[in-house]
Amino acid sequence: MKSLKDLMKDDYIANLKKQRNTNPTSDSSLSSTNAQSKCPICLDRGIVVKDNVAYPCSCMQQKKMENQFRYARMARGLLNCRFENFRQEYYRSLNSQDQTYFENAKKALKASQEFVQQCLRESHGLGLLLTGPVGSGKTFLAASIANALMEHDKRVLFLVVPDLLDELRATYKSETSEIDLLDTAREIPILILDDLGAHNYTEWTRNRIYSIINYRLNEELPTVITSNLSLEEMDEHLGARTTSRLIQSCRIFRLNVDQDIRLTKYQEREKK
Image 1 (cartoon, rainbow, N blue to C red):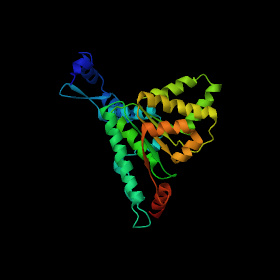
Image 2 (image 1 turned 30 degrees about the vertical axis):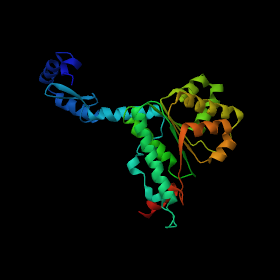
Image 3 (image 1 turned 60 degrees about the vertical axis):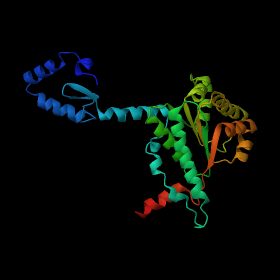
Image 4 (image 1 turned 45 degrees about the vertical axis):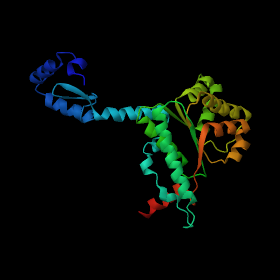
């Protein structure tokens, strides 16, 4: 742990004491500073001092996570997605004899946790393809993966596919380079493509998706993809060459529910 002298000038404490002795309003000034500071522990300095040794304040970890979150481009509503909050009871079928949905959900959760461990061990490996209808928990698991990896300082990029395609189209009318956007998606250590669904794909957009998937396959860069399409439907919407590469580069799991989980949560909320 660094000494305070390594982080500040040697006369810092002496000057601070002198200011306190010569400024009778220092207490009120300090109160004003406290009121303006976001962190009441370190007063936004980022460090706390104990026995002449400087320690990082706990707020720095929070700031670090917030910066990683912005870099990953995840929506704020996904910040609290965690594996431990994945509610498996949503996958119990109304037919009590049929446990297929429940067992598939358990497998998808286990695979997502294994994906995180794989990424922590090595930078190359298989990706994960989570399929299922709208409201089946695919994005929740993908965000849980991203949060778990960012907590270990892994670089993650979370892209919603329709938004990505809109940005690529917008490069025609801006100074942003399409190549820059594609290179970022292709080369980021861990990429999450959310909602690779039944959009109005053109040959141009299919080629861009293929370019990302193919590059990451060849470089063995792990990718997480969520989609409400079956493999047969992917073949129809994205083309055989993209679908074939997804099969080669990913472990595939399907989530099913009797009722949209968002609707279930709404009903639970309104009962309170």
